[in-house]
Amino acid sequence: MVHTHTAHDPVLDHSRRMTKEEALRQVRLAKSSHIRWRAYVQAMVAGLKIEEKRAPIHHKECDFGHWFYNDGFRAFGHWQIYQDVEYSHELLHAVYQLVFNACGNGEQARAAALAEQLVGISHSLLEAIALLEEEMQASSQELF
Amino acid sequence: MTKQEVMRQVRQAKSAHIRWRAYAQAMVAGLDVEDEHAPIHHKECSFGKWYYGDGARTFGHWLIYKDIEDSHELLHALYKKIYEACKAGKTRQAQQLTEQLIGISRTLLDAIGLLEEEIRETEEELF
Image (cartoon, rainbow over all chains, first blue to last red; front, side, top):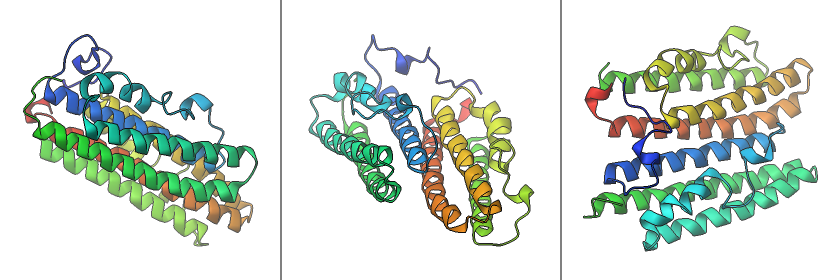
């Protein structure tokens, strides 16, 4: 196996435009980092001690947000579908703020109920990202 | 390995995880489950053995592969709490935690789904 996704990966080289294939891989990595963030939120709600940096509250501070407002914005910022992804992501973090507060106040049942909603919004976000991927696939543009 | 073989290996690993989850659920439901069927440590379950063995050899450098590790470790950390609650006779607490465990398990399966997506998009000769 020689296919690697490391820090030397061209997908992570921010100084040049990406091929469509590289851009799609970057979106998959962003999805993956969002799912990792969700796992940390769920673990916190379940009572595990989670460092705040693992599941940041602000939507621009999580790994997905870092991608979305940097490389993602440079490549797709002018696409309507890209902007639609932003709404789901912002809403998700707004709900997470409620989850975080409930956990902090010891309201475990409320936190668990809110976390269920959060997972639902996370699925909506992933569906929105799938549409972005569809748009990329359909685009005649070869460099992003 | 061919891409098809790699995909089959990942499906088997997912299946092993789901089997582990079923044993954990059965234990919480009050069945007598041998520890070997639902190991506490994340490197001792069948999924973990694949992940740190063949899986690491095949995908060890993929970032998407590494993202799976966090969900899996969190899952086992939570399972440890469930196991202890069961042994202490705190059935209600164990049941509540198991709902959370199932949620994280689904998140883990979503993460594996992304790995499968990445495999599908990767050229055959790179395996």
